[in-house]
Length: 309
Image 1 (cartoon, rainbow, N blue to C red):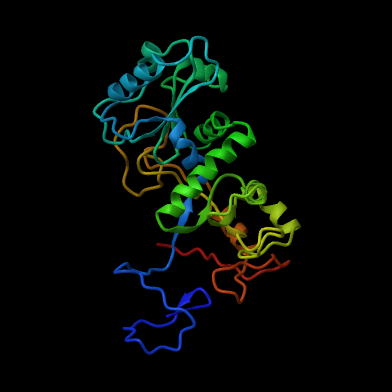
Image 2: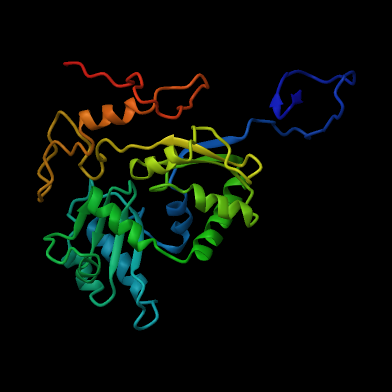
């Protein structure tokens, strides 16, 4: 039984029912719609336009994929060669700018890791994005994320068209909603897309600390519906990255990583110190609505308490 958009009962209909409508699904199953609770949607939508590196088993293999891609590019193309999906933690060799320079010297090349916490650049890309003197070309954390953002800058109508294709593909697979963690806040982008007819998914748009004051100024709670979106768009949670990623060897760990050949701390990096994290959490005591946060009061009860281990 389905009522008000929810499954209210499960059983066998033997011809006697009070239901207003009976639909014969011919053996198919009726399941609740799927929600992806953590997706960087613009990044995911752009994957189809990027070089797939997910199958590369080494840095050398990734470089060969770049070489093959460059061979099909128009001469003097200004846009960077962008690849996505490499996982170098278990590679037998290390990513290095020289490997990419050997196969792609003229065009900037930006290869993005599957965890979005590192980016491997050739010399042309290092110069373009302000890291000309970097020794290896493998950027991590904040430096990588700035380059990833810059390399993904395309016209709004272009990225919106990619997102529309991606929302339709997701809906065709049973996804009805996403929590979009795109940085720093995708609320206005989704408002624009929904207004233009992209209505395949419900979207909760997470906000990062650098846009937190904007959310507060708009007095938005998590779960509040964005005006003019017919309930398809809501304010999402606060997204805070406290440390790095295991693949990038920056997740903050008690045990040391093996030597990584660069200046990254052997135990990873703590991107948000405990004191700063507690200050952020104190601004958002929970509301009575499950899963939501209310507008910060002057003195909210802390959600984060430190204790010795």
